Image (cartoon, rainbow, N blue to C red; front, side, top):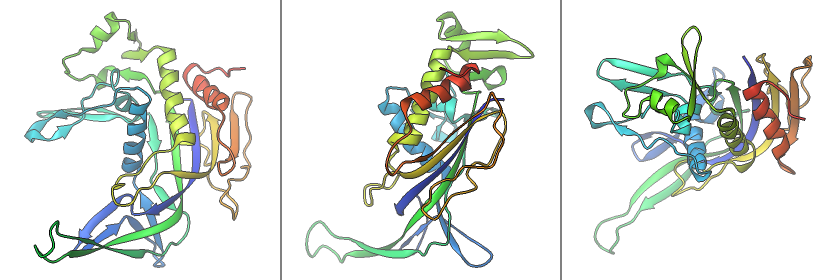
Length: 295
């Protein structure tokens, strides 16, 4: 299976993805090693939320969520209409039946690459009118760290199987009649968006991931955006850990791997002084979808 394997080093500041609240303290998400070292991280779910907002800015329709069992919000389960249901997958639940779509894009959390001390930021909630009540103090754990994120994008973007069909009002076969998706019959029925739409979706995701960035959650009190430092990209059918080696300036170094004639290595890119070109992004997306390198 064709895949785009990405290593990304990025800077994170503040408490952009809070953990539980203990008393008056808002904790930060972190891992603690057996040696007692602390590694703050941002969950992949928080990153996907930021990317989902950017996809909407690009003009794509994103899942507004439906009201599911127990009046809870749930995935709509329409990857043809909603780009995030396609790229990030879904779990459609109705009664005792579940229809999952395995995400064609795998993303790790953004995890600090070295031990990072946690600082405390003090704040308070103050009454609107003086004398109403006393201020309520609270504490927020914050950190400033360089994090590593690993991403794998597979050729399944824009391809859906019979087992992923849901009972939404808009049936997939209606999309076929409207020529929005093509149906192929192999071992099981496959529904495929047109190549142009698949390439468009992958380009949008890569452009946001590489260059535009996203705003993290909890931005009302501590606005933070993705600040990328370096990126390296491998395109091929193998799963090379191209993110393993970087220097003291947090720049990826050239990996010692053999690249075949149908494979390509892009980068490393120094995003402190430049960006990933639109031409490179288009080459990656086109190859992922149709399996041929664009000249």
